[in-house]
Image 1 (cartoon, rainbow, N blue to C red):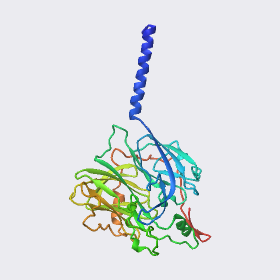
Image 2: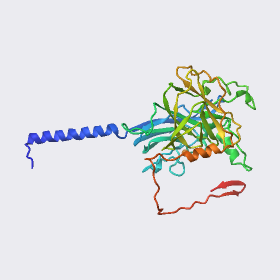
Image 3: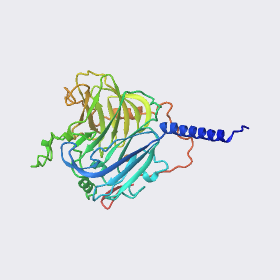
Image 4: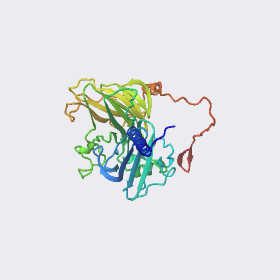
Length: 394
Ligand SMILES: [Cu+2]
């Protein structure tokens, strides 16, 4: 037993308290943080592909701001609905919401909608590293531009099982000139009225519609203006010799896409928030709701720029390619590549798409083996029926 005098005891208590404080402080330096966002969601006129229409923005942007966090951080989004006449809810796509199912954002299922003029606070933990998305889960607001990225890095001091110099992010989308209300009216009409192919493919919220192709030209030159800076192409600026981790995700309404960077291979290292055994592709096939990370090395002729393209696959191509620029620093960013954009495999060529699906395997060391035996079996029956002139899927 150790005997301490009163003065010594108080010093010991002080020392102990200090140690506890230091331990807590050190712990909090490497452990989870709280990341707060204040979002205002509203309708604004935007010209993402040079054609002016109402879009839904977050703090004036579509795609919305990127949420960047580290594993186990808490995300707090205070969302104010300024849509005036519409409810809203946001789904955090790929976030497991362990312990917080009420913040999953599926309106009518896990929460009441956020009413116009009100503010709702989402609060959840991002418990896995990787590339995720968020998007509206009310009506067809996602198709009106209410979506964005969630990027979750590893905690300080840990490193990914692959190396790169810079981390960049691109969201792909398709874009219709009809309002989501016109689209929904046709889709639910008897007989069903097909909405048709999208007018444009957007690369990180930017596309280029050929204004002279408007079927009903407008007298108002502002309706479609090819020189509007809002539709200048997205530019990914790269430093020669460096390797980029490019996070590519898609939130299309309809289109399956092929994504390509002219003259550059892409090494797939992550799919939907899981590390995968690396494999190399020229075209990355991506379906709505998917996310990938690819490694791209800027190892081509640095005196010129290159095309980044997105193209429809699975359906006959009626929408022009989405185009962006892969710019080698210090070339001028607005300098167009001297070539024509590369052509992806034919829309109905399924072989490379199947090959990509087959190549996706969990990375050794990161395999979550399912249990050998199931404790419960749930059989789901999917049906398609005509009921009162409408097609129903259940
Ligand atoms: Cu989703």
